[in-house]
Structures are given as C-alpha cells and as structure tokens.
Amino acid sequence: MRIIETPIPLKELDEIRERSGAKVSLTPLGRTRRNGITLNRVLIQGNQEEIERFMEFLMRSRAGG
Image 1 (cartoon, one colour):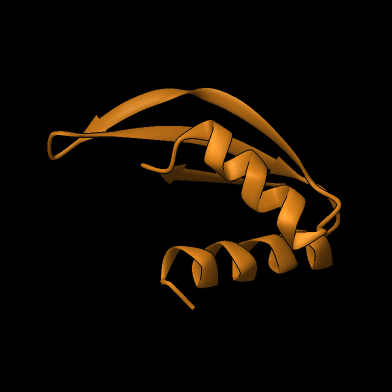
Image 2 (image 1 turned 180 degrees about the vertical axis):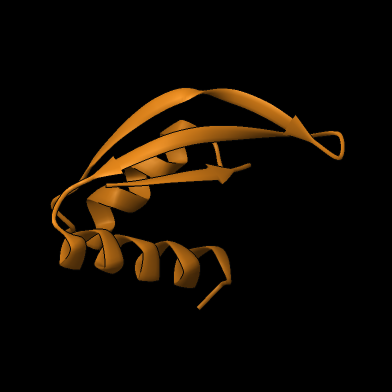
C-alpha cells in the first residue's frame, strides 16, 4: 500500500495503470493544495512488486520516456 500526491488527473492515472499492466487498485482520497497547485491524494494497493511496476511506468510516462 502506498499513498501519493500528484497533479495528474484521476482519469489519466487510471489509463496509465491499464497501460502498465500492473495489478494495482487506485482509490482517490481527496485533494490538497500545495503552493497553489491542486494535488490528488491517491491510495495505491497491491503487492509491492506491482506497486513498484506501476510507479516506474508512471514516472516514465510523465517524463516523456
């Protein structure tokens, strides 16, 4: 289990999850604001390997790689 705060829209996070093939579930926990930026708080659930797989894919997809 892992909680992230990200400006990425929830719909886009779900699309990234599907493309990654990682067996994780994403649960929105609400929104916060930091330095004028709205961040989505999201709970990621799954086994540790799958969470790491999703996070790596997320970083690569958002970095343009």
